[in-house]
Image (cartoon, rainbow, N blue to C red; front, side, top):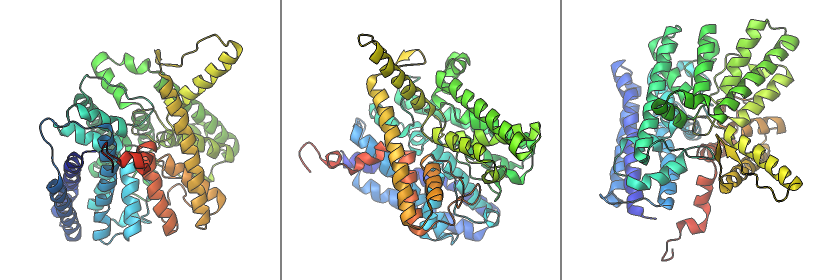
Length: 486
């Protein structure tokens, strides 16, 4: 690894983090919120100070190229550094203690969206805006946004894109990686603007519309009310939010390609079509269950089902009511959608639909080969043959995700949380959902969890946001070993 390049790029990331805090500082200053203005000014100053320190040890030169280990280190350490700096406004402003500030920041940048604040309605608007901004910046990927702005990465940017983007495949729409990052960023911004305008037309005030648009497209789910969407009691808003949460669950690379080749790209995408079928089928099952078991009217059951299935499958985590009170069948299907998540290349968390498709096709190919040993059965997705290594990586990720779910559940049971609650918190956190069942609840978040569990949840969110292996590789001795030794 080249420590000079890594330090230089991390310096850019910390400076970018300070710039992301500027809107909150300006809002606090404009509204004469002195504590908030002082807090964000201090946080920005700290980001700048860290930038100067990092730049003392490194920097970029015109012909620098980034290797694979450099890309992984920049992505992992950069994400961790940004999340730590992002917790400063909560701690310095006296809103949360140290561990809770860390949890809130990690949940924001990872798009998990669960909160440790017991009453967000008492928070100043500058802090509410920062929570939403942390969702939005972390949603597409702070490193991808950073790549779209910075022009010095060259060919080495490929390694950062591979480390940061979620899902088993990394589609490219343009020959140059930097151009791909810029296109993804443009799609992200445009969708956020359209979403904010739509929410405003549905009756939200401008501040609420902007905040909810950022957290919707980022599938983060931070809101400005304790009951999130349920506080509005607006049926049109719920259907509008469900639509944009489903849109945010699709691959942003697919949208970028559709911009160049037409909307037919979207309708031909196998993964997105299967994701829509999952949303439709699960919504129908839950709506039927709510009609039969909860006595809902048809319109109410459909609205409740579609909204929450869209919210949980996209891992956004918005809630319109306490779904912990729903019948057992409905809750079971919600857990399934949380685990599956959205599409590869989206801002959604979870296992990803593409991996489910690959694993099912892989199992089918194995069964077919048992019957016809000489037959070759390649696994295909969107009409293209998928390399065997990609399929194997999907299986490895599934195994790692399940094992980590079990491990973190045992850690929380050791910390005094009962079995059901431990499983719920572990699955929803590893899937970057946020809301859950039991102690976590639809809206209560992480406030009631013990300190040790909160710390491990930060680790959990770090792993899930960077899709496990990007982080785990940091703990292998060979990663840190140079060609010439240690």
